[in-house]
Amino acid sequence: MERLNRWRAHDGWQEVWRHSSQATGTAMEFSIFVPDHAEGARLPVVWFLSGLTCNWANVTEKGAFRAACARHGLIFVAPDTSPRGEGVPDDPEGAFDFGLGAGFYVDATQNPWARHYRMRSYIEQELPALIAGRFAADMTLQGIMGHSMGGHGALTIALRNPDRFRAVSAFAPICAPSDCPWGQKALGGYLGADRAAWAEYDACRLIEAGHRVPALRVDQGAADGFLEEQLKPEKLRETCARAGQPLELALHDGYDHSYYFISTFMPAHLDWQAERLKA
Image (tube, rainbow, N blue to C red; front, side, top):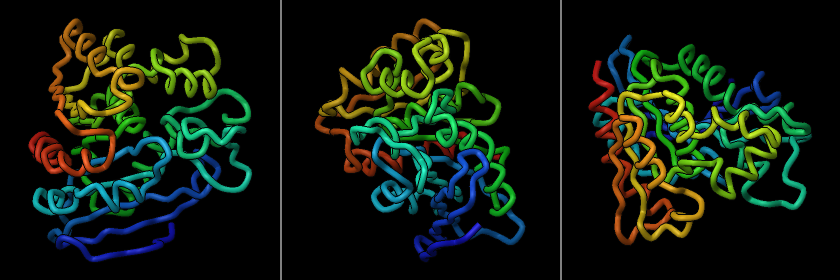
């Protein structure tokens, strides 16, 4: 691992690291904020998964998370959204919703994507092992959150690993990717035409199949231009209600899909996560 940058902030250290990934076969970067702590102490970890076109820098620079993480003693990890580098395929038409910056947190099975686009394995297995080995992380106290495509990632990863995450929350997540254009393009392209293979990457379908998480919070901007066609929070609400999955879903007037929305509600999300990450 190579540390690329380090900044003092909110009585802690904001860092950016690069490492060679076995999962993706590429170099990968992530950012991590570690608040000051007593020697030998282990801190809860919150993962933040970003959305389409983003990398670690978006939330790190605009997410307004450090003050709350310092107050609660939380490590905050922000991975990239896809593999990158020479030889990594991209959408041939340069679309923003597939290819580079749009890994959808899946392990692709279709060529040419299957070689490098293994973001599920990277986020669920490889990066947690790296964080546990290098930083003062208490891996028995983990929460996960994300935005848009990253909200989809947070929901599905937590639903598949309910014993690992005490809390999952999301800003404007893609709730039912099997039923929206972004998800259909990505899941079809990475996994093939058989929709049965999509089910483990669709939060609503996972809940319908019996998967549960202990706590779930979603905040959504009512002025979000992607609300009805792509995000479908009402389908998540209906699915959770039928299944008995607890859900706190709030719609906020005037807020859109941007980091102005995320930064406004980030402290409340971290307060909520911290309450559930108490040892």
